[in-house]
Length: 108
Image 1 (cartoon, rainbow, N blue to C red):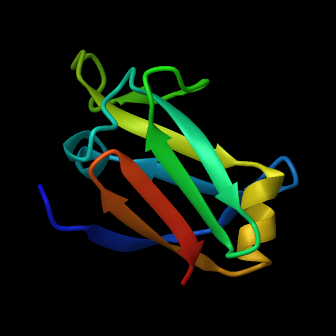
Image 2 (image 1 turned 180 degrees about the vertical axis):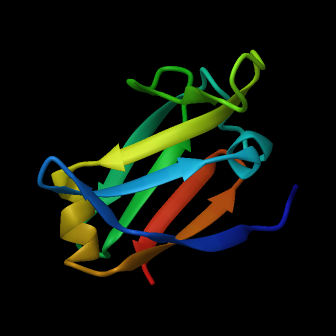
């Protein structure tokens, strides 16, 4: 894929902080397969958070079983922190742009 994809995700809450739960094939197609390491780069001044595939990243894409007993997994990234809260400032949804090796979250 060379063109950028985007979609909108609802901002939820978990443990008192904003939460965005990303899951599915688009993650894998853009370089975020299960087990991929990545880093999170918040830009609070511009109200953006970037997730960047990085073999030395401290974070890791986890997996959720596609179907019980299937032994196949969807990639999952669960962003749940105060930085996201600072970016969203109470917004109900965020725009998520998917590019090869980079995911950008911003207020919709």
